[in-house]
Length: 289
Image (cartoon, rainbow, N blue to C red; front, side, top):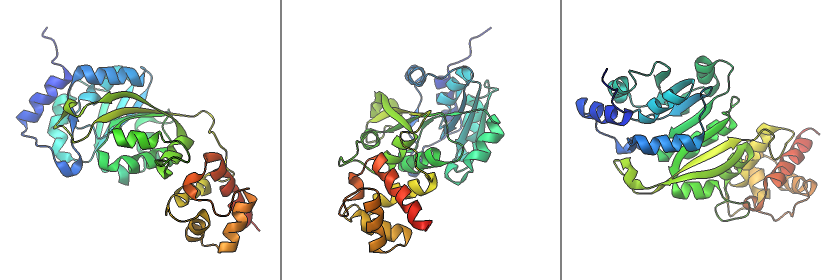
């Protein structure tokens, strides 16, 4: 019996057969190298019992390789022009399903519940870089959060995501991700590995969700709003940002900072997660009066 062509070869043949041309506006930079992708999936430590959500499968090479390793793979693709390509590449993969939709408009809980039931899931994705921040914010704050997120990001984005509190790169996204889980770079990936090559080098990043969050604010939804407010206007003091975000007076905002044992002149980007949690809890006390 002839051996099945590799996923990478199937993808190259399918892209050519269907005359597919990538669209720069959709951030389509595909990974077609089976060996590279297999190594990245080794790094991500996918197991046979894992359910995997993939956002932006592209030509489907990583999708096919994950289907060989995991229990089930659900891929969400915005570009329906890829349907014939993915149909060819994923034909042997009975446990892989593609949904054609804009992930940012999907209900993550409903989407994953339909695919995986109540079982936990992991995210593995080569994301279009222009929506990296939006995707990460959605995944790390939704009601049904993944057990881990392994994604390809621009090298500069990885540096921001790994930033320490008080550093120049410390931002709302870094703080939100740090609240969700521990992040580390698994592998650097050069631009030449992609088809077509992007203008930047990349990093494959793993974020593993904490069993116990590093801080426990009394009201998580308010805490996440405080994180966004703290970095909304970086040159403004936190008093001003709290006023704008929560519709309170300057005196009330000052009282919140005093209750959180913080200097009234502090800027949001200088705060740690623990300090942001204290601000959130102090706001709760103010609004409950």
